[in-house]
Length: 312
Image (cartoon, rainbow, N blue to C red; front, side, top):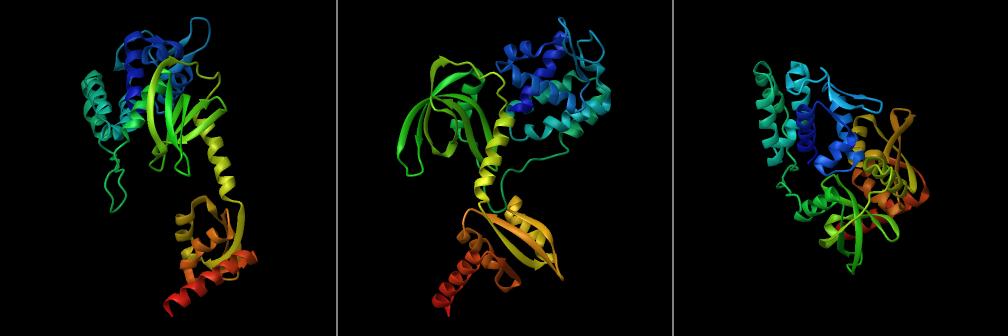
């Protein structure tokens, strides 16, 4: 849990006054790149943490050699608690760390800091659904990422056939409640859906994280590639302006406004195939018009005939 780790980084700086990214990485058993990102996150959140270049440089709290949190202003303390507070509601470890940090704050800041921590609540359940617990395999893989331990994966492919491989786990991504593992394999970097992982066991062997690897950048590349694949075909659609927000809410980046046509808005809707675009649009009935391509218009006509044959 990153929020818990950010608190740990701050408490480490509180104890030592000045730290390097390498020292933070060694203390928390994370990569130097992750430690550097955590230090930058604290600075971005408004915490008075800044880097000092040079041979004897590092990161330190504003105020020089001070080793307590009295260097934080009330606004800065609130910024920290707004950052980690929501995570405390879903992570017991973060909640415990937050309590320790509250006790470390000057008494005059505690009330506002606690209020900031309670200002946001994360409700991960969608309407009408139960909260989805984090899969146990995620915790095991997360530990392996932190310890840089190779993992034996038994993985189920799209055809449900299973295969076994040993991978170097580089990081985990939670995208809209679907977890992914990014790992290095004998065939290069690969991404695995966690819900297809049948087994995941540490081998006890360690590995070296690739130099310069950044999980956020690597994931952004994968997202861009997947969106490109998902956008293989574009349809031009006309609809009333008052419904545009609904279409964009449903289709996200696969629906863009490109102009107007009289009193209607011109949209571009993308998907891999004509059928998939038609399936997205069929429920709108006569309230929309597909201008092109003909292949999407043909699929809509076919779907219409099927519905007429079934229910007429």
